Image 1 (tube, rainbow, N blue to C red):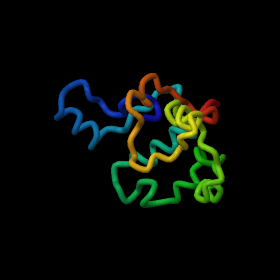
Image 2: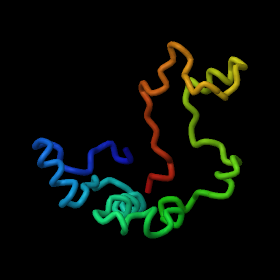
Image 3: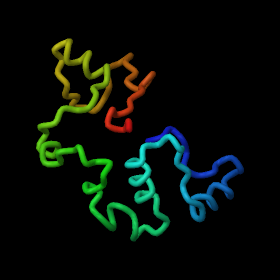
Image 4: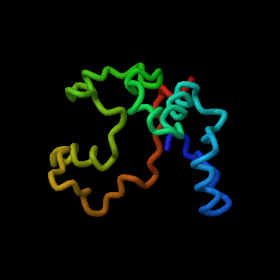
Length: 122
């Protein structure tokens, strides 16, 4: 998701893909920012006991150094982007809360979606 590419070789069938996942190092494009590479490498470690989340505090990763975790947890940070469907709801005074978890009929919130955080640029 972070690079738009699959990190393991998936061109030679399921058996090769399984082998690649279990044995090979994840492939990260050369243009990927170094902070993101470090995060991905730690998240994709083969031994689960060595991955971020199990070993180490992911909040201390350099990739997240610009995040005020306390403000985020308390809802004081605005989202980095707002989907067009949510903006339309707000403009129509329908509010941004969708209690039933559904998207308004006829609105495709994924189509044409493209976002890359400015902080990912080095």
